[in-house]
Length: 161
View 1: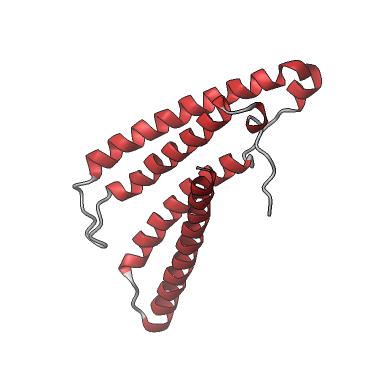
View 2: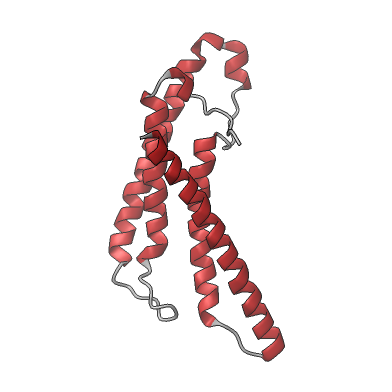
């Protein structure tokens, strides 16, 4: 199971890198064509926006997993050191509830907009909202692992390289 999860996180990093490279190529090509040849790729704007949404949502998952989101824990660690494990589990519960709302809202929007086809790319507009559903599901997975896992998983460990 550990190898499968590690493989999943490696693929998420690779997908984000591919999306970033594609966005750079699309935007650069569009700028060159627009200013150099007085034309442009209409599709590139929409595909860049779609790629950006996916990179942001997958990046939020990776940041949550690595513990790189903003956290202010100095107060609780200084004044309530014995309560820190309980407070961390409570914060993971709040995160789980929040990403569950993200997931269900994004699933509803994906379903509602799946039959709306973009005139430029021909892709369903629900693909944009699908990023929220996928990231919500992955973040819920991380939160469940941290909430119900062993005590050392409550606080994310530093990334080993």
